[in-house]
Image 1 (cartoon, rainbow, N blue to C red):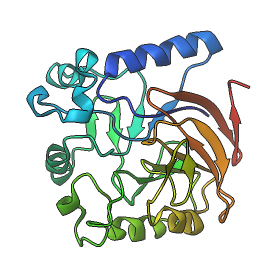
Image 2: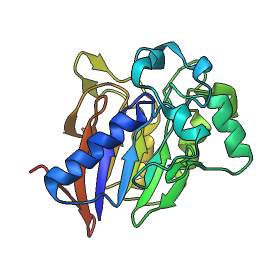
Image 3: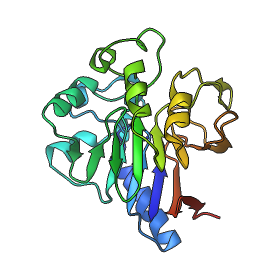
Image 4: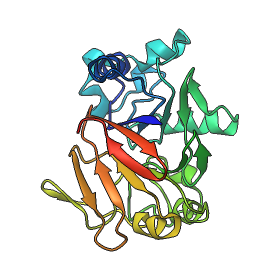
Length: 236
C-alpha cells in the first residue's frame, strides 16, 4: 500500500496537491492514501482565518474547495492541528459529517479507522491548561487526557497519526512538552508514529518505546510503502 505522509499545509490546498501529483509523476506511483498531520487549514470562512494561517493568505484556498464542493484529488485522512476552525469542525462532528470535503476525511481524537491500514489519531496541540478538561470541545485547539485515554483503548495499530511529537523529543531548537503521546505508543504499539507541528523533518526512534517516528515540516511529503507491518521510504 502506497501512503504519502504530509506535514502542515495551512490551507494551501491547491499548492499541496500540485506537489503531491508532481511527486507521483516523478516516482511513477499513485498514492492510495495521504495521511496529513494537522494544520490542514480548515477555514470555511476566510474572514475567520487565524494569524498563523493568515501568514500564508496569498495561497489559502480551502474555502474555495468547500463552497464549490470540490474534491481533493487523492483520498486524504487528517487529524486536526492547532490552527483550524475548531468550532466549525465540532459542528460537523456533531452532525456526523466526517468527510469535510469530497475525499478529505477527518479522524477524531482518540479513534481508530481502517484504510487498508489501521490508523489511530491524536490531533491538536498540547496545553497544560486544558489537558485535564473533561470534554475536548472545551479545549478547542488542544487535546485532552480523555483523548489520550480513548486512543490508548484502541488496541494495536499500524500508524499513530498525531499533530504533536512525544514529550522530550527534540526537533531543531524545540523540545516537545506534549504529555500522553508516549502512553499511546506503549498502548497501541504502532509500526510508525507520524507527526507535524514543529516544522522539522527527520526520522527518529523513541528512546523509551522504540517506536519509529517520522517528523514532517511545513509542506513536507514522505512517500512510503506499507507491507506486512513493514514500512519503506520510496525516496530511498
